[in-house]
Length: 620
Image 1: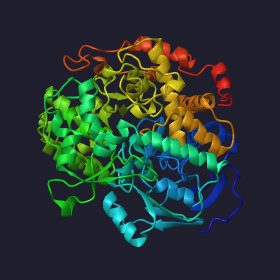
Image 2: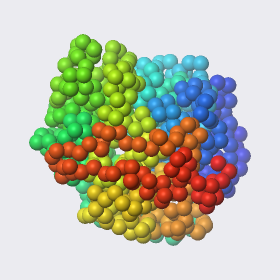
Image 3: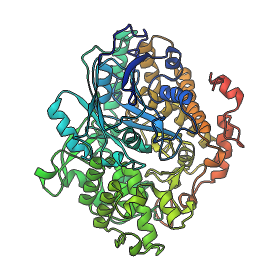
């Protein structure tokens, strides 16, 4: 079907159109992008949240045809701005029943913009498995019956043979079988968190492929924008962090995190581990690395392509594990076998599962087994002694097929706890989502990040653990954030945490990689010269705060209360060794301070009317 061409809304930085597809009726249309919402929320997650707030509610079942998927790029996408070729997939999460957001790199977002769209809105449900094929204004809904049941790698290989120039977004068996933490994959890069792959699967949507040949978005002041881009790239290339990411990828963080007490060990119970070097970025580079990989428009290149055990014919072009994956399948279960971690990563990527939730749920099972709370007879006869990598891989394979204990694991950590009568206080999950692998006992502000992140615990929604740490190169002093004692739980830590959360909320709308950290004043200039209206540090921060608060309002609409703003006891119990030995924040104190800084009602968790008015959110 060809979508009839009409003039797009004229707005710098945007194409002006959203593709709208109803899978139930097979109707294909488009709508103009809302200029007012672009000014208030930019693109990406902020725009999507505003849209979804108005269109779905508490009673909308996440895995029903009534739920809506939005795939959004951002205003910087398609320009020369560094590391801005990312996109977000947003919906109501089937895992948390709250705000669902998964952020992804790769090459899909700029291709979608070249095809003439700032995003895609998908409603309804197809009767049988389908593919959405987009070539500019030519849109087709095709059968995916020949792909259903296949892994992501095979799916993408088949589609590449059929349409070699198209960029591919697809799910694996985990999404098809509605695994609550199923991911969506863009040719090796994953939109992992909050179960967006399950939402795809619930709509019988196997893949979206896109190709475009239109021009880039219009820029208000091309020359000044170009000059600012050069300044930003020069700054990024000169950072030592950039060199570390180029050399080792995110696995560079393994040894650093261990030295700071930031790496979780033995299901969050241990502060240091003698075997940590065996799973380090240095070991990965020495033993497994073939070459590096770069997302569209990125000047960093943190991606790794590896081979496992020298079996190149079987594992060639295999994505290397990121820091989070290494921690989850490594230190969390005392597994020192880096090969097995790489295999686990490859399995999760191919089956279509978030590595954080997969590994966190499996690690909980290991913990319960080693505490003698569960017996092997209850878990398909598996012996989950610490470090048993073979059992770990067996469990991964069981989950997407819901085979045996895999059917329980597919529902996540809290479901495991409920089955085996374990209190949520002893499970490392918040709002049903597994906590990522940075230890809040090494940076007390991280407790606020985890408790208040809109999609559930998420270190990328407020990386105070990096920004305020002495010796770190990220300089947010223009935002009012200075270096601070990581073990502070005072008003300054609460204030800094809020500022960084608001700034990263802005990044979720741009949509930019949070490894790309030019000074905020350069980001403000990029937006000013791109969008054609005044953008400064103040505008930057009020926009970020508005985006963060609209996500909060979405969650409140879905039923969240201040009781959700909590941290389980397991994460607040001090370790007996390591750099953070004996340390833990006074979370109740930090939470009170946080509400005050945010101007939220501590009894309801709701932003006060004056704050909503200040942020131009009173209509919500």
